[in-house]
Length: 173
Image (cartoon, rainbow, N blue to C red; front, side):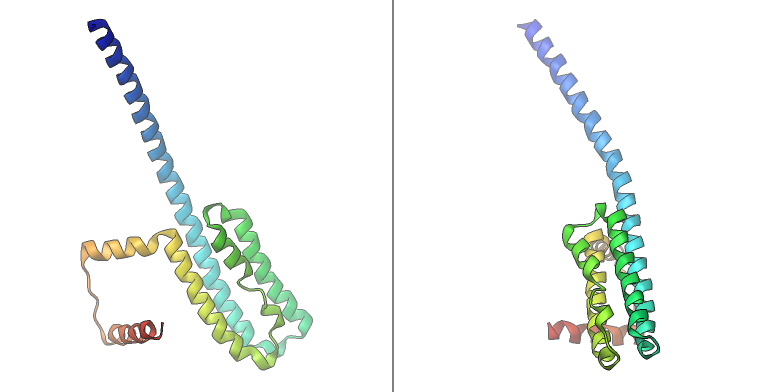
């Protein structure tokens, strides 16, 4: 009986050692994956912001481009985003890949008469996309968590006005 207990103890020890070894290995991979994921989402955020500014500039100057030039510009943004998704999309959900891949589609169809309408919808879509990126990357939860831990509260006339606008926006929804 003592031999069986000792043998059981040895086997249990081996199994627990293996379990802890695998757990530690997974933890080391988690850090690498988290860092790579965060960097990828940061690159996506930068690409979205840069494209947003550039596209708005092009839209403001839509009348300066003929249809062929405009199509080339629009397709370059679509291609840039799809290419980014192909290279870095490993870390994104399928929904985010589809959304960002289709984000600039339709830009090539914007005629001079409808630029202001397109800009309004484009701004809303861009804001929604940034929210998706913040949520999927985990940054939104981290920011909320840090706010709860640190308990900071900023205050200025600009921030109070911003909070009023946010409150109105929530009421609309």
